Image 1 (cartoon, rainbow, N blue to C red):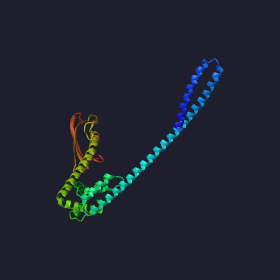
Image 2 (image 1 turned 30 degrees about the vertical axis):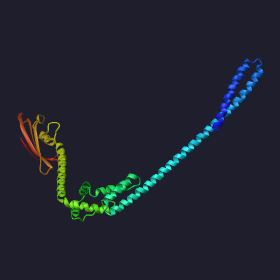
Image 3 (image 1 turned 90 degrees about the horizontal axis):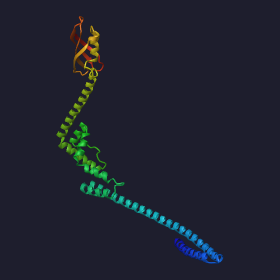
Image 4 (image 1 turned 90 degrees about the vertical axis):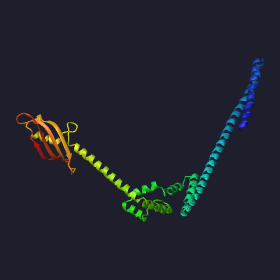
Length: 305
């Protein structure tokens, strides 16, 4: 259809040239009526041929386009099918190698098993458990893995491991799990003194950290008992002193010292200050007391007036 349309367009082009030539001659001819009649007929024929050619070309082009589109879509489907087939074949081959590796592990041929698993992984990782099994295989003699496992053991489990009686689930593969338990127990037995010493040191460090944290919290509570941002005087003791003074307005803080008592529930605080006595003279005095850290209550108050 497209070729026919092109031929019709070519014929229309020839007729158009003829039409132009006849039109020029008609303009020069004295018998214009007859000449223009011929020109008119040629023009009609040219128009019909040109329109037919255009329509034919368009239809032909659409048909060709549809054929090309259909061909492309078919090729896409074929490519997808080929890729799918290749993937399925790859998965089958990888699974076969995986099963062979498991057989080698059961025969304790671990190096051969590693080679098979690496080949399986190189083919495809999709739907393939080879990588997980290879990771387990690499752990059976890995000291980093052993140390992590030991850090999670209780004291009872550590003793059982030393005596080669501890059995735990470390691997999904039964043969590898048995080998891992055997190797781990041997490692514990060989390094038992070092392991227990490290545990002891770790426990001591843990206690130090807990004590440091507790002391930090205690210091915060004690600090809340004082006008630290102002002059460092004790809040409650200052109030008590001012109430007992002859002239509370003459109070002037001098120095405050304290210590945390052994019970870590109370502090012993001594505060010196200046103020006017009954005769109006400015004198130096001090008060001491025991103070509850939680409540701030004062007991055993002793003032040197």
